[in-house]
Amino acid sequence: MAMIDTPEAAMRLARAITSDISAYNDQKIVRGLMNDSLFEDLAPELEEGLNLYRSRVAPDLMNATNFFNMAVVDKIIMVRGHIKTPIW
Image (tube, rainbow, N blue to C red; front, side, top):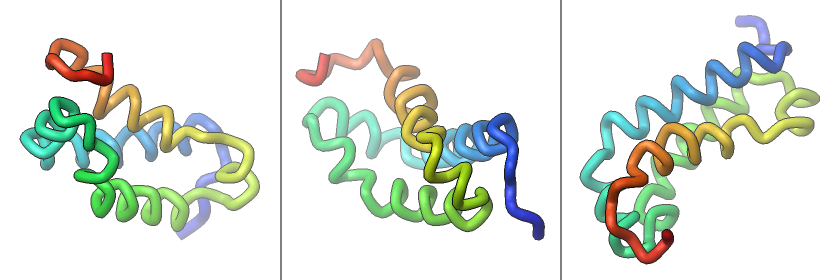
């Protein structure tokens, strides 16, 4: 399988991976936001997602962008902006 070497494709992949993390871990995410422990609670899933992303994206593009982190914010955190949390 060829490595992803365009920003658009890398961004799509990051958003797809984080969308899956979000869909399959809703309760864990809500609990993590409410307890200000999101990144600790979701560490295994985020690590697995990032490893998948790294395995598919060309190293130069991976090192020059932070699409995965941006997708975590967009697809996991911001969509739950209505949740009461000490984070915001």
